[in-house]
Image (cartoon, rainbow, N blue to C red; front, side, top):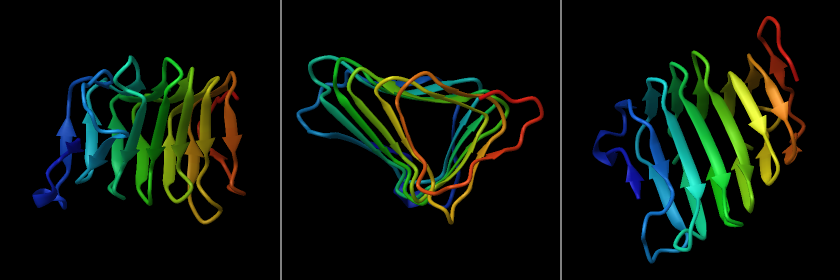
Length: 171
């Protein structure tokens, strides 16, 4: 599955509706989602990648090194439900949350958000059971302006510094 249009890879693609990628019937394993241009979720929307049901054993998401922006309260939910696998590869992208919104990493199976080579600028972060966050490496930016909520899961720091840049924050 491709999101965006590779013929317009220099243009920003804006999306203003909630999107759940889950029980899509396909014989392809793993199911792969690739971004082909910079992408902005603009409106209070949720982009949820959820490995659910019998036909969705593994999801791989590849930003293809294009920037992703979650604006106006939009959230990204990466969730391996039903003991499945979700792998989100941020590549060398800038992943930015503006105006609220939360990055949630959780699951009953294996959920990995790999930002080792990316820059992350988050409003809120929730890391729960079954989730793994591979933080940006030491030469990259990792900023949290809101709440960091860890109720489980694994945080791999990769020797990165995390900047807390909000006013009244909680960890």
